[in-house]
Length: 397
Image (cartoon, rainbow, N blue to C red; front, top):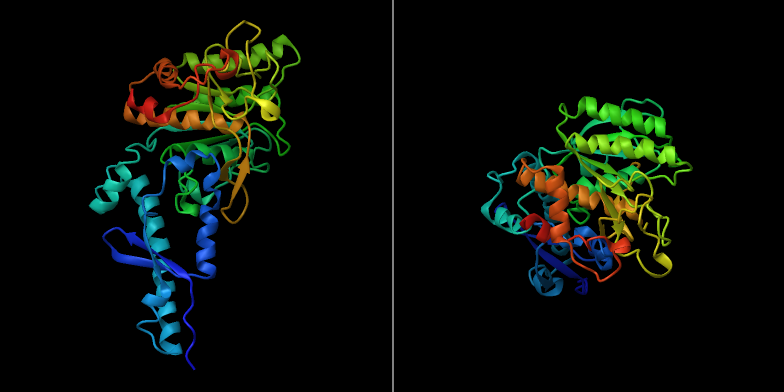
């Protein structure tokens, strides 16, 4: 007995110069594909940088394609098996091209001209060769990081291998430098080719002390040349109890800045009251980042200046609400977080891109480029700083 032709819609995808086309069958497979697209409405950084292989050419109806050539049940299921094979091949080739080629062949000489032309329209830079240190809860060896976790130092439990028993640090690292491999590029970070150096200074509850942070500062200075560290991301902060506690952290980050490192710190989530910038983001030297979508209303918790020294902070703002990024734990999954901690790695990642483009740039150069490229939101300076981060304008300077 012949089966009635299904009404599923399948996608036709292009796979470089390797295959003429790959086809994703309908049903459960189509639903799985739709799930990966379900978060498109979120204002995530990754929506601005689509995966070069995810070009949807057209839709074709399986009734007019398969059923027209398969007039019996056996042939019909045979073709479905063939289609499933090509879908698996598409996934494998996509991951290979996207991860291996971008990370290992920055000039894209080993990729087909078609794929190269697509990706080069998006960004010529990935942060390759630039080391970025992250002060946080650790970093889980997620698939999106590949072999780019160049170093890991644990100042809490003194373990040797990378781990994250909280998840905050892994999320920050994904926003900064995730390749998006586990999502076929959907959740790709700002600098997917940079080197990651994880410094665990917070425990599984997100708590830490200034002694551990100062020890991590010293470790960083001792190893900066070894791991080519140019950027420091500090998505942590403290509401200091005494002026001395603040001064200790601020002096620490300013020493890093004076050594030529680009130090990017979160403004904190203690707003909306004036003077709510957390330490060490209150330093007048470092680049302090607030959340552009957490400035007003009930969610207006992004830290605001001025600081105790009457310095106008934050320096600029970037998206920080409901950002999808890498999650710690088995399965190479993703999770959503909000806060200035999510805004900060976008700026750190952009700094890595700029330093790959021009390694001679100084930290002051980066700060002035951010100032000159920010989009004014028309808000008070103690809320928005220079304005909202604009990556395209920033990299064009």
